[in-house]
Image (cartoon, rainbow, N blue to C red; front, side, top):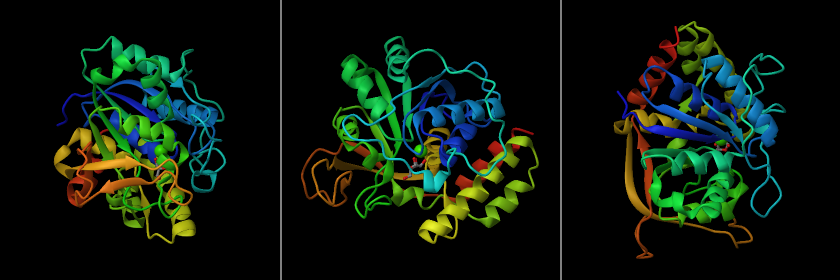
Length: 313
Ligand code: RIB
Ligand code: CA
């Protein structure tokens, strides 16, 4: 299964980012992780980097370079979501204080630029945090844009979760998102409309707990914490594993229904800053620039997860 895509995971782990990395590194994925880059988002970039390194330790990603990226958005102050992911950014599971793996001594955007410039135009960028690193790479080296195979991102939606209009990843750096969405690179967008369907519940926890290997046990602890905070803050009956939709799509696109739509990013609105203006009915007559995911097949999605976690046994 899978399309042997070469991927760069740009993330802010974060519980759902961590699960996304675990899915990408599993034996069912066939994805080749070229690099993992981190960005300020759920918590400060230093903590997100430590978390990414700890996840690499857990799944045995010894040879994948991890590079730390932007500590703040392009123009604004950093916005963090500590209340959702906890003080460490990965609260819940018991983890060693320090990771064994070390980050490379290179900025994330330089690693992204180098990997893409040296590639055969076959690298897919998979941002699951604010788009600051991606935008900075495009600004520093515009030649990467036509060489990017696809950008498969988690962000936005026809409604918000950080403000009534805006989802966190886009809100955290809407100027960066505007650069990316207007770049012309092929984009497949996993917004809240579809990621809220990827709802891990207590039943999911019970099922995953039966798998019984170190990685599945780690995911169980992540989900227990995530489900608790989503109940507390949003009164959800589960935790939406937003970011993992990107990797699940790359492994098996048949899990999702997508449609070409126009999406513009609001960077000026008093109440709408960070909104992804999704032209669901084509009223703008502006050229569609996004493959918009709107539906997922529950059975295929969760059985992929079970297979992926079982592959670590
Ligand atoms: O709004 C959900 C997004 O914000 C996810 O990427 C989650 O990890 C947080 O970064
Ligand atoms: Ca994230």
